[in-house]
Amino acid sequence: MKKHSILFVCLGNICRSPAAEGIMRHIVSEPGATGSWIIDSAGTSRYHIGDLPDHRMRLHARRRGIELTHRCRQVTESDFDDFDLIIGMDSANISNLRAIAPTPEAESKIHAMSEYFSPSARHDHVPDPYYEGAEGFELVLDLLDDACRNLYHSLTQS
Ligand code: 4NP
Image (cartoon, rainbow, N blue to C red; front, top):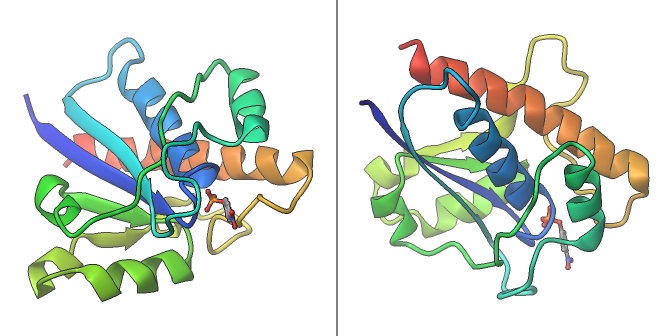
């Protein structure tokens, strides 16, 4: 069985990346899904280490049947050994990841979530919902669902 390991990364690791982790876990556990998966998330900051995801993100995800139980952690250099793909939500996440990538090979594992958006997407990154209302959280979940499904297909059809 083909093995895949993916780390989703955002700033706080309490909104976007744990939601991406939860959505991707959901997709790979759907009937008919194939492959062996290691899926995790982390933040570039230390602000919320040990915390559950933001209560608003947990609420909006739960309405879609996805429980978010990740505990916040900071991304580390060793993540570049442990994961094949390290996916940042916006350009600041990508810059921060590049700054800690220990080797050019490690740096080549970094990708932007927007690379997996459908062509019809009207965004070029996953916007930080932390200071937004309900629409911001719903938008993030819509963007992540689209990107995670495309990511799943790109990895399982190659
Ligand atoms: P995230 O959102 O990067 O999607 O987890 C944020 C969460 C917390 C903060 C910023 C963004 N913060 O400044 O505490």
